[in-house]
Image 1 (cartoon, rainbow, N blue to C red):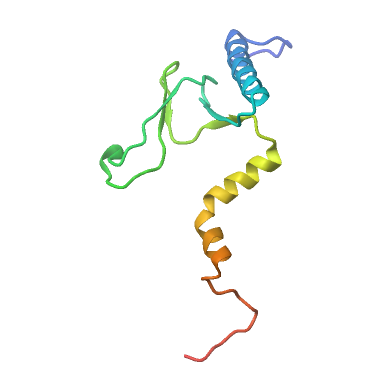
Image 2: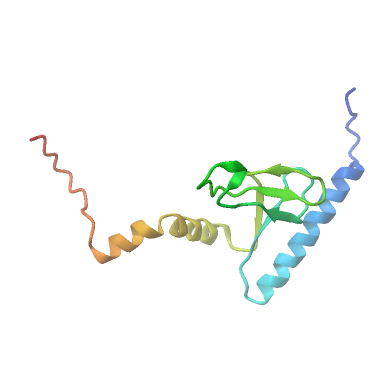
Amino acid sequence: MSEQISGRLTQKELQELRRLRLVREALDELKRRGVSADIPICPNCKSHRLIDLTSSRDLGFLGSFQPAYYCLDCGWYGRTLTIMSNRPEEDAVLEDMRGAFATLLETGESGSHETFDGDVNDSV
């Protein structure tokens, strides 16, 4: 059965928009206080009420540190979710890259790594 498009939102969509508005208002308040924040959002119901289930024994595999989340509102479980942030987009991307490549940046600043100068040495 197909839903007719009437220009009106369903009850579920209205509830999701209200939840997202509450999160946006909280992020705006934090930004006014000078605090940068990233809040995970459930991709199913758009709730911010998520529990981080990451552990060293995640699903029985030792050393699996990939984050997993559980939504208290709809019961969704997964590893991929939406993040709402109050950081400017350009700054957020740069900060995330700095965090992801922190070890490379540290070795680059100390001069302990070799740089590629374009010469290729084929001798073995």
